[in-house]
Image (cartoon, rainbow, N blue to C red; front, side):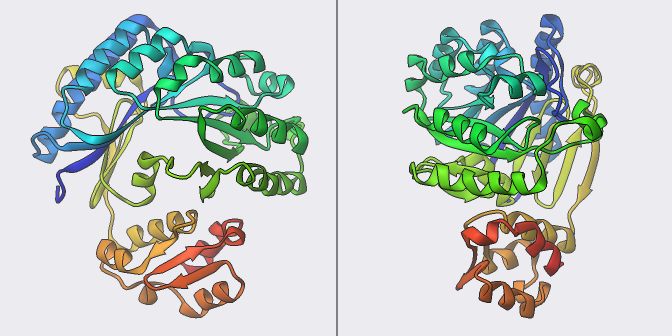
Length: 380
């Protein structure tokens, strides 16, 4: 590994129940399996270090995602916290935990803060009762707002919310009400607003033909009003789905988008250490058995060649306000940006005001973000 600095993602797959739109790997929470799973995460860390032939890399960011990380007990979090605090942590470490309203408690928040967690993301999704019920969420609007206004949240440097748009029965007005209700709470400094994706292996995906989904025009109007609602309250868009108050961007997500090294621990977790990426088996029981026997847990591993890496940098770069740095593009891929793309098309995007060029940056404009995927496709 060229750099001795990495980010760490830890997947906690346990949930109270499966949301109807979710295609992330998750299973029902069981105390005994969760205990063994935590043992396995710790064991996998040692396996990964041996595989990469590294000692104790400096950890810049940590992100616990799921699933529902907040479903773990106080005792289980104490064990994980002991493990994390035994690592080589950066002085300016960003440590994030995804939290769902139904499994939040002030006691857990106090413990997280004492362990060093400084960023919470609350999975609100929507504050409309009908939309929550249709999506299979197990919390209520009242519970979500109760959590967001809990005084224990002042212990965290950043509190963010996750919201979904394009849900069945959702309207432009209900979406705006959800966003406004969340961002008017002083603790909230970050807001991620994701468009609903209908994956085939989800309940929504299997029943899409009978879902009361908003039409394409309505979804487009929602995407427009998201930006205006957030930005007039000081939330600046820095990626196609992410907004933050100045100085409160999610450093961990920027590691993914910037193709920096990160290691994923847990079932279904993904890793990237240049030039390799791999994913773990998406089965908690098999993952536990493999880890505790010292066996490999990878489902696949591949080396990214120049072509693949440059494609990914284009797709991810055009989803960010920061855009693409042509010098860094060459540093990462070994290919000059102007040699990889059709510059005639790039210049057309600049004339259309989708891109702005100030050497060495090709920055995406506000209008350009709506056409991010199209720009990448046209250039590949």
